[in-house]
Image (tube, rainbow, N blue to C red):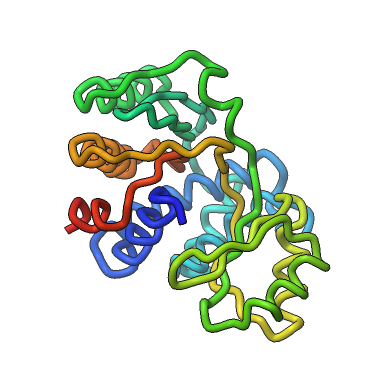
Length: 249
């Protein structure tokens, strides 16, 4: 299991109980607005919107809040005009990062992201320097209690590309366009899905073994997460669990 994946799990568990929930909802609302604006407010025909709605519900965002965000995106109600931008950067230890933002002020957001990296020992990268190693994939998590052979039988027949042990769950990778179909196939077979979403996965993994680098990388992740304009951060670091736990305390 990669350190990045483990850290994302820790952050997800924290987010369910701490004050960051309001910030998460604000980011999800922005994503819902943009997806609805670009491809319409019908989740049956807008796959991107459908994925974000599932993500919002998993984060316990109310149906009313989801509906309001979609309506703003389709022009019912008022909403800001957001621009989608992806920044590429390197964190200490040679860790590659992609940062997806939705912003109504490109200059402000670019400056904010640049400051985070420069003060913590990272650097911005030229377009293409990092993105070449990332590809979008569907990721499904299934409870670790599920029998591996049963999961593998259904998943591989339904389009899964890989199944791995992610600690307290099984991690199933698939083509992003096949995410909904695979999720449905698992559920029809009686296998409960704990989460399903698309993400960017790197073909290269960078081990981070120095405590100072690990602290800097995770500090960058935290600061980016705190920025309202930053929607998603993808990274290729692998931090040993003992170091990760020390930093996370």
